[in-house]
Length: 273
Image (cartoon, rainbow, N blue to C red; front, top):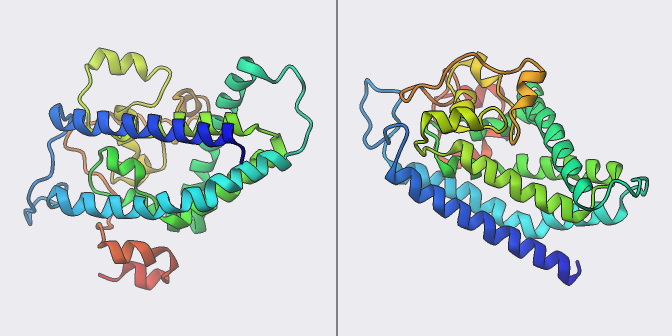
């Protein structure tokens, strides 16, 4: 990887880290939904305490943070260097970048949908959905198996469609910032969020996707732009409510060790208490 590519990776990492810190602080100063503090036997919609949950989410993220420079970034770079050379000259510069961003978001819409429809992919993606509350740390809570499968799928797309590495990094930055935003528990003015939701995925849209009701979990697949769900009729009519139950229907959150091995367990072992 040449120096310019290294610089792009560094700038992308710095921008996303700053964005994370801003929303992590903001959602604690102005939360949209009440924070879970203590466990109460009769209150299954409010998981126990913040620190234990944060520890699980950050531990899963740390594994993926190690995989990124070792596997994910080099694989994407290799795919862009070896990509099929068929892109027309007009598909370059700033217009080409904008086309790339929209096309990549279109493709990730379908990849997200596949993660809910294909049983093998759902085994890994379910780890993200088992979180029983949403904040910025939910946006970085993914099983390493899902990250590796996504990296392989992305490499295939890069190779076949010839995306330049700069477009991939720009989209990755946009994707991470959008994901942190729409998982966040930041309280937004209703009018502002309604206006933003016409174009991009906002917390009011994505929190419904994490609603512990199967019909809502299997909807609202958009990641950056909100019009894909309207276009392909996958938008849920359910409005977000501050006290809505988050998670996977009829399945509890699990300890960290179980989350790591869960995708590799049999169906009987995954359902065992």
